[in-house]
Length: 227
Image (cartoon, rainbow, N blue to C red):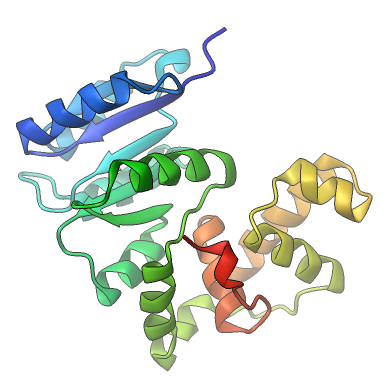
């Protein structure tokens, strides 16, 4: 049985695609199943893939033509909500991170990231759905200081005590099964709580849950939580 993490690479720099493909080929846990030089090509390719070959994670550039990374993320999240997306970009700044979070990405890394950081991001996104570095934390703190951004993460319904507990554990990178074990619940119950949190908060994935929790001081990040 193939337990490798299936990766898609989307970037208009052919040299980068080839370099990442070679790098991942040396990693026994990763397998590149799709490469594309723009968003349209990527969507066309994955539309015809069998389920067992569908990527778990897509590494996506922002600046591409004719379909850029922003458009690709929006369309991908609409048609393939289970697909996790990591943005690799030279435009690594606070405002960009905030916009990417709203679109539902799982991680945001600069293109000059190290091989170790990229591999760590892929592993954590695959397991937990989200990955933050210490630099992300600094930019996120700057982002949430803007009160206009907090409106986006505002919940009209109060969270129950149990939902707060589940949210804190999600932000601490526990899996559904690990949360279930800690709270003496079934995994299905935890999954229901997670979905209820997504619905109440109005966000798309674990990244949005983490941002909401930080904004509302439900979760105070421990420096050890980040690289």
